[in-house]
Image (cartoon, rainbow, N blue to C red):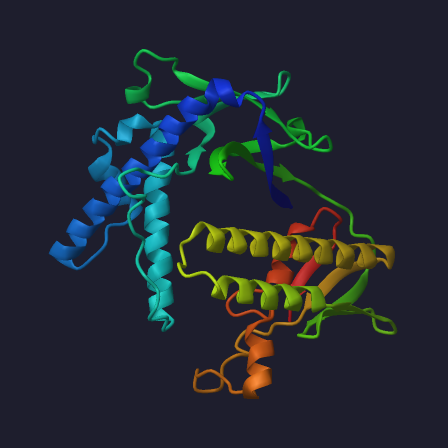
Length: 334
């Protein structure tokens, strides 16, 4: 069994590497805009949007492509293709408000985009807790060939135990940070042969049953957050204002923390009771009737249903349980 984790680290030498990372972030935005313009031209001429393979073939000789390491440039083009695919999926599902990916511009300037470094684009030095990030050919002139970032991780994280697949430089909250995407093969022994069931709900976000014993996990905190942040966002005049974006980030962080804590608690309870398999209820389609139209549960029922975490195409609780697989507990849908 293989598990993947993303560890975020702060940069310990920001003054030394900040300018270089800014150059890379701006270059990624410019390449995105160039590929978005090319995609628009093809869309207008043929009615079809090029996939990432065509984008790479057509733009690999472009000046903006060589601002970044080749694998980093490839990842920018892949992200654009994935954004178009996500837009198509939303439109296919009837979301008329969905918009295709736009250009990355902020007035006359470019925002700093995330830069991804694949295996050939970085070199990790675990002894001195630093990572070397490669630049593109255009940015090497009169400067070093790489950016040497020193980083700080949580004390309980040891990257030598993991196989680092990618490194991402992310500009967030007015500073650059590093994300290490790591993979590790594990073969845990299940804690027992028992089976537990998880039923998802609204008032109680999860009910864990062991047969003769049940544990309820209330979702009041999440419902209060949804209500609070919904009210605060409604006060913002601009959906792209800094305050609106700050509220969205805060809501996402609190929701992610809640789900992560919930999944760890569920797995912990199962391990304590010798459970080797967790069966999670499959509620896909609960919002739709037999004709595929939205169900009407009444004004209060609709508010509760559409404001909770019951799944549409994915199950957030089950997704978190899958990440907690280091104990040998297996999650199944039913």
